[in-house]
Image (cartoon, rainbow, N blue to C red):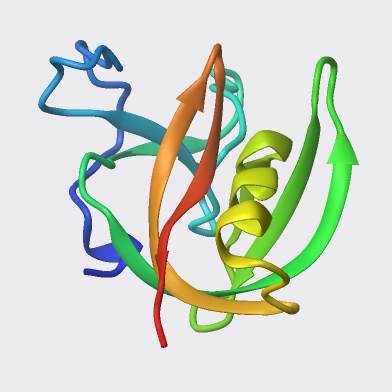
Length: 126
């Protein structure tokens, strides 16, 4: 399944719980299809139900600092959408798979840490 195939809502869902028992998990996305790293309620964004994993080939493009964390950015080579990754998830990716190079094809999932959103590699393809 591709990320763009996941259900979409134009307004913030009423129940966006990320508890372990939650069956639906929603995350904010920018109009270009990129995962928002934070719920910027004053900006144009929409929501996707992101409980399911998705397949994508992502290219590492940049990193940046927020208020409390370092974030790494990955661009979907098919759609051009850019998705944030937490430093701890990049660390796990390197520990589990070694040096992957600039482009990684795999199965990913959206994760939430505190009030922030990012992606995490579930397994590498190939």
